[in-house]
Image (cartoon, rainbow over all chains, first blue to last red; front, top):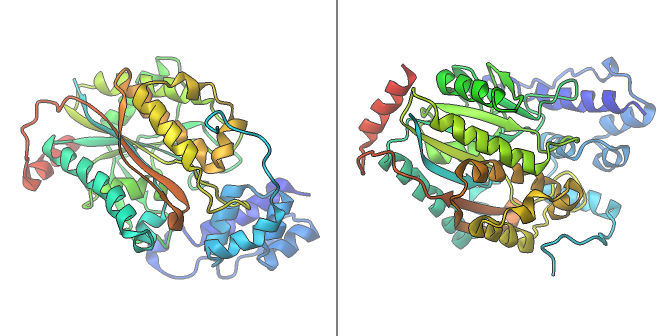
Length: 97
Length: 296
């Protein structure tokens, strides 16, 4: 597990498509995943655009959201992918009757 | 001295811009109707600049250095970041005088905000700012808070920062009429199995606490409880900062709609202010002139 490197890789890929996005063009073309020290599992998740694997590997949820959007997943689709990984919440907030 | 002549908070789901029509018409009209109302008030009251608090979404900062609070000091900031957000990408004028004053004042009053001379503004600020001024010429002081990456600043601390921020704005002599805006919340989940859920019960409870001034019930909430209403609920810090700035004035809810197509409890709440002595019904031209004056 290379938690930081996985985050850095996904973040850099997302940002590559955003920086100077007003200029047109695909900033993500030619992105070099080999520049990051990833485990095989992390590399596979990136290459397969595997949202569920990223979730299980502990990718930050804000970054999952940004990655999913940048990778072309509709929100409903990525919920369907992640839903089986959820668990029932037993705790209650003070606002809950 | 400057006066806060307009203070409000609004949810900032990006779909309010990118999928506006996906929301049911009644919900859409109610939510945007509230934002139309505050925009009209901004014009009537001759707002010269705005301070907008929102939160960082890994747009400007990453894990090497993640400030809890960052004030945009620059003469201009770029936005919106997202390539898919249908808002023109432009340089937004900052207000270096007000921003530096806020940074200095809060540093002298127990806070340690970071600063940036050039921020990228994502949907967090841009959606709400655009609804305030669709010309995107109103000088903007952006303040981004960490509402995502633990450890997070406690919500009571965010409220206290808001108090200092309010004092700072009111002590500034370079402008007369400032708007204070909080952007973010209410309940929502992103990037996890509950994406799309909304906790209406929390949202209504939270808005009631703001209206009743019962903030102690909110300010001692640990993060583990806050996120029972969604990981996006940490964005309540922007609302609490504005509440702190405006205390003891209580909020009035202008709109609340659980907009499922936008996956967010969408709220707008306003705090009553003085009007800064501005004449009412200022023309757009007068407004433009004021903005230009504020930049000189």
